[in-house]
Amino acid sequence: MGLGLHWELSADGAVDSAGALRVVTALRESALSLGFGEVGEVVEAWAGVHAAGDEDAMAERAWALSQGMVTVAAPTDDDTRRTVRIAPTHVVAFRGYSAGAEEAVFGLAWYDALPSAVPAAGGGATSVGYRWASGCATQGAMKRGGARTFLAAHRAIVGVLDKARTAGLNVTVKDDGGYWETRDPKALFDKLEAWEELVAAIARKRAPGRAVPLASDVKAQIEARRRDRPRLDREPAEELEG
Image 1 (cartoon, rainbow, N blue to C red):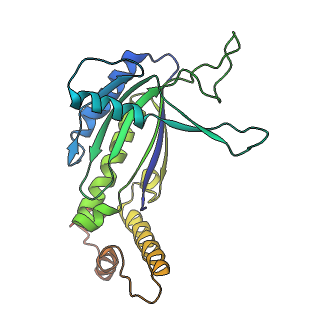
Image 2: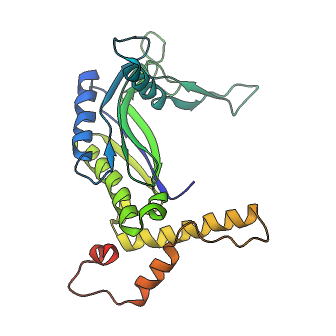
Image 3: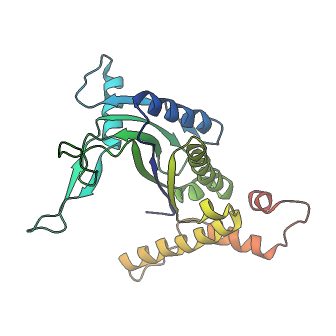
C-alpha cells in the first residue's frame, strides 16, 4: 500500500508483434535516462512456445507471461461477480526499479480472446489489440532515500508513460499524487503527506494504544519547507529537491 501510479496502455489494432517489440524497446531506451536505479532487459514470450535458453531465460519468459495476466468480469446467472484470469498469447515487457519503490513493469500483451472483445464474423471473440495494465507504489522511496529519491522515482515512471504517449500508444494514468496531470512537485508532496498520515492511521487502528509514527519523516521535511520562503532564483522543483 502507498501512494503511486496505475497505468493502462493500448496500441492501435494494426500493431503486430514486431511493432509491439519496437515500441517496448523504445520505452526501455527512454527509461535508461530517466533516473531508475535499475532497468531490466526487454523480455519477449509466447504462450505455449518453449524457446531454447537456460533456466534464467525460461524464468524471465515465465515472469513476462505472468505479468500479462488480466482479470476480467465474467458474470453468470448464479454469480454476477464472477471473474476469470486470462493469459496472454504474446508479451513484451521490461521492469524498472528505484530504491524503496515497487518494481514498475511496462509492456504490451496480446490476448487471443477476451469476453469484452468485439465478436468476429465467425461468431468467436477477437483480441482487442496489444494492451497493458500495471501499477507501482512510489511512496516507499521517501523512506528509503528522502524527498529527492521519491521525486526521482515518481518522475521516472511518468517519463516512461510520456514516451509511450509520444510513441503512439493510448495512455490512461491514475496518479495518486496528481503529478501526471499537474507536473507540480509541491502538490505531489502535499498528496504524499496525506498518504503518510493515512498509513499511520491504519497502523494505529491495527495496534490501538500504541504510538505509531508516520511511515517516514516526510511530515517534518514538508513543514520545514513551508517555514522557509522559496528562493526567487530557483524553480519550485529545485527548491523541493534542494
